[in-house]
Image (cartoon, rainbow, N blue to C red):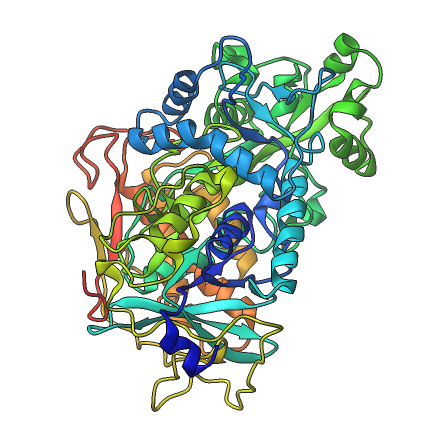
Length: 629
């Protein structure tokens, strides 16, 4: 875009999207459709996300729902699973607007499975009162949805409507504006260089942090990057004590479990139990009816905790139980499992188990973080210019325990709403799309920004055409001196703010900050994952959490997770992010002394703590001179 063309009218606003799961891909497409400039940064390939591994499906009450199903029932199921801790307005938005974004996916090429009559095939999953789960490719829903969205993103890139930069590890967020308290860009590592890009807002869609734990369903990229980025610029976070463990992840051989990375985890979807599979112990006893009246169809946290308690009762707390899917084959007929669950059938065979005849060894694994960066219903965080959507965000819709198949839906609904909030209007009221199926209004993508966004340093004015020209940076350190210009697409990295004094801030009262140092040994990612699994996993108590805090504080003295590592090694940045996330999770878990939802303490008490009311949200934010609340 030339200077002359800028004079003819206002430049389009630029949105920087960080992450390529369902929230990032969908929001990038909607923003680009509406005329905004979009830069999409992803730390690996576009398919490297939790979304790609999702099996269960997407929950939605469609225009023609299953018999007896209603939006009100979906709301009730979500609130029940959330253990009374949900933001009820966020849940209403999620369930009411779901059908709009299912239609929006259809516009971008997503094709859901159909029944014999040509209607959407709706499945039943744990804790849902009716069949309302949409699938794409049977048990490969995430891969099917991601593949369609990625194809459309690449089409947009070819047309110059989205700029995609892959293998870009975002290391920090740039702050600017009159008081230096607004997010105006992102700095990242790419091909061994420090680079940066400026925009009007940054949307974090970075997913979760399953790599905190030794057994996880998440891919290797799930290292809490977005949470750490947001915390370092002062954004509020909440509900970090609520980490959902999927109850049925296939147990790998011991050697593989000890290795680093995610080792290609195999999640056995809730849909398998929805079809009738049961859980048994090594003696063949079906134990779930002894722990909950809904047995295998109880909420995820209940099933995970029941498995952990049962194994402890048997004297084998680090052991596993078995998923018996042979009963499905017997009831539904030979070949049903292969047809209904083709990917799982193939993967279990590859692991040496014929699940039509044999039991599958399973154990709980870290799966989904209900907490995250606090946002309103339009993805806006407590820091101007910073948006968040998907698992990295905390809208309150998931409460203390996520309802199955609501996570992909949350990424859709609140990813779209974050774009609406970004596009906005001149009076600062977020744009409401008539229907995601028809796209967002183009006219709101340009012109004067909302009043709360007018302190942005500048609008980007470089057209997004062709691949980015990435300047070489000789130094491995952030550039100093004059700030980088704000008009280029991809620039040399901005100076990163120096470390500032900080402390946890909590509501309703301040919590204790763990500062004691123990003999934790040398830090490694493997040691961190083992520590978190043993002391802050499915079952917790005050003593275990205190020991975890001591070890994490000792490691923090060496790793300095509050600071941006001065390194070109992506792994060092991930390690710092994971350690910071672990400290925040453990601190929140210590302060919530009452068991609630996915947060279960063996020593659950009702003593006064930072969270005096058992269902009150526990919010923390970094206190720093560079943040202006």
